[in-house]
Amino acid sequence: MMEIELPKMHPSQQDMDLIDILWRQDVDLGAGREVFDFSYRQKEVELRLQREKEEEKRQQRQQEQEKALLAQLQLDEETGEFVPRSAPLTQDSVTSAQITQNGAFAEHDGDAMSFDECMQLLAETFPLDEPAESAPPCLDASVPPSTDLMMPPDIPAFTQNPLLPGSLDQAWMELLSLPELQQCLNMQMQESLDMDGLMKPSAETQDPNYSQYLPGMDHLSLVQTEVCPPEYINTYNGSFNTMASPNLSQMSLNVPDVGAEFRPEEFNELFYPEMEVKVNSDPLASDGGNMVSQLAEISSDPPVNPMDLHSFSPGSFSSGKPEPMAEFPDSDSGLSLDSSPHMSSPGKSLNGDGSFGFSDSDSEEMDNSPEGMESDYTEIFPLVYLNDGAQGSLSEKPLADQQEMKAKNPKIEPAEASGHSKPPFTKDKQKKRSEARLSRDEQRAKSLQIPFTVDKIINLPVDDFNEMMSKHQLNEAQLALVRDIRRRGKNKVAAQNCRKRKMENIVGLEYELDSLKEEKERLTKEKSERSSSLREMKQQLSTLYQEVFGMLRDEHGKPFSPSEYSLQHTADGTVFLVPRLKKTLVKNN
DNA sequence: ATGGATTGTCATCTA
DNA sequence: GCTAGATGACAATCC
Image 1: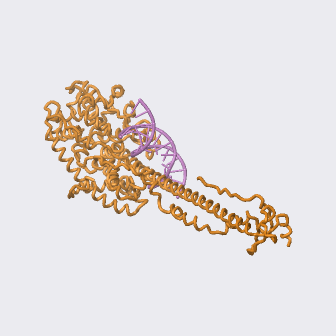
Image 2: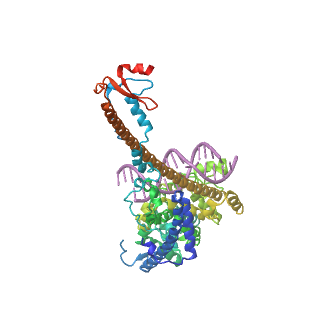
Image 3: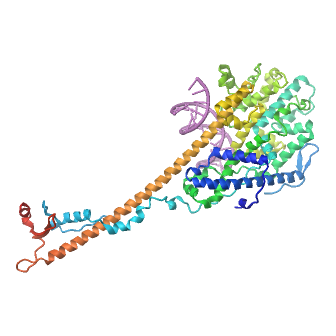
């Protein structure tokens, strides 16, 4: 594999941290191979080390490419964006024995045995050595795994998909493009607008309609243009344009299916080191899903924290119309993750006690029990904002405004269609949900200024977790978020383990099925061979009988008639020539 | 456009 | 009663 040939590198501490995170992620996701082959695990450790080095190399390349791309950008004086200087780069048959015998020999005698009984005795007493010797190959066949069955001859080589970039810039691109982050930013800006509208109603300096087609991250562009320091402008636009760059295709989330490696037909791959290529790529792939979020966690010093936005001067924003909040098709059906549906609920955010951020259902839960509180953290976000300084402007916000806001609530797509940052967001749409999810939790944690890492929240033992929580004074929203993050994180891992076990069970059962099929085949073949042997011995006995009978002569030298006499023998081996009609007489004697 | 695969999440049960 | 884990079910998303 190409990656293996890459020169070794000396990773930075940050890279090492990332690798550690990826490593842990992989453990969480569970490769599962080691369950079946311990030696494989050892080999995988070596492979993993190699992979880590390769990953670092890739990250460095990504950074270089970003720099190169940034160098190709120039600042648009009007929009504050970086625009590319040039065109963007391209990219049984059991054969039953037919025993023939003379029907004339069909009478039974207690001591003497008929021909049939002789045949039967032969079949039972003779060891059938010859056929048995032919059988051994199949007798042992079931012992080793049926590799023929288990080993598909045409296992496709796993192509190494480009993984997520390792650079912090790109991690931030991912973060900044998160719908919920955008929503948080939106809400921040909304707060600013609302405040501005109340405090400086005449400060409307922009086209009121402009905000209609600038939901989501477009605010950022606006903010950057109007109020951001140049370094912020550079940070954002650099990031955005980089995201729009062809590099993005490299950071696209073409993550190979992790589950595919456990397809039953590929189970035997686990035992074959030549499948290194596949092995080599899978863990990376499985890690890739969370890479961005982990990067985001690492990047503890983001260019712009959403909380920072409210420090921007609100005077530059239109206050005429409330900024429509981008309503994202959030997949969350969960207790506390539904943000967008509640966003438009008029009045729900008017709780004077500052808990206006809770949804209807959330509010009910809060009314009943704070413990059961499942808050909408994205909506709670303004609460934190207000706590930081602004006072209750939203509570004075007219209902009509919010309803109007709801009516005008556009999707994010129109915002993308507006031209601003469209490529990044279009790309974001294709992001894997898994990445967005963890990032969202992390982003929520950051938004609520939760002083723990998501990793700690999820993985700390209960005691440590409670101790950690007790050391910080968290409000209800923060507590609820932390609990939800912990619950979701643990359940996510549990689900992954559950699915892994399920796949392993399926693989094991298929392996067992193959073994049983093989054994059945072996037994069938053995039965056929023994039947054939029995038939052959009966044939030999018949020939011998006829030969012996044919040599017998009476006192006149004439042969005995087979219809009148038969040969019978006793258990002690004595052979008698018995007249067929006198068999009972012989028996009595 | 559609269906299968994957993944996150919730609800529920159990230890 | 609380917590963690397991798992079925559902939905969103990706391919």
